[in-house]
Image (tube, rainbow, N blue to C red; front, side, top):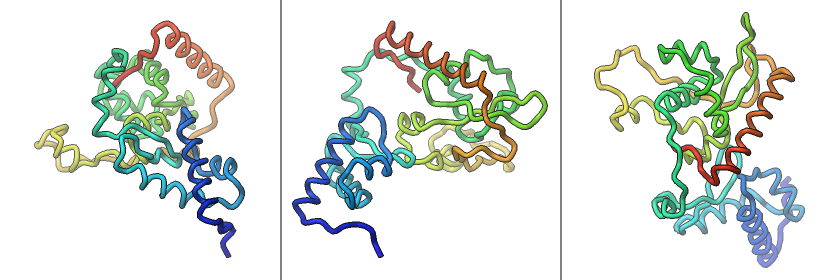
Length: 236
């Protein structure tokens, strides 16, 4: 039997207004569990989200799914208008973009594995920049000699690149079609199926206390930079 209480149309309309208000007021995407806890008991949140998404589908603001959370975002075909109001962004270096792409497709991945895939060394500064953007995170430590840090992407990465899931990243055929891969690549070349599962893998250990302190220090540095530079932010 369903635990969802059946409300009169007027009550459902009020629930829809409450849901809309919560999503508009939030700076971050909101999960269904949080929304269920905030709305009156018995409100059918999944159904309300679908109704709200449909209602906004043709408008200047759309309701989109980011991982397992929901948020209002400017319609993709109108994003060019926002550039008038935007502060000049800092562009990521080619090394940072390549590193970000490898992490997205191969996570969880260590610095040594990143360097092996790229074929060149990666400076600590490159990883620090990506950590400061909030697009990657330190996941854990690999159960190998030296216990190197493993890296993965974040919900902020999905949000910035308008991806519902990491599995929405383009595959081999899409990359070829966009001209991002050479046509003469080896037949054995393949694109991995990415996964950003938050659960640690069998060969990962949780982060140490010192690692968590380093993450807090990076967060503080990012806040200081934002206060000095205004809303200046990296752009892919």
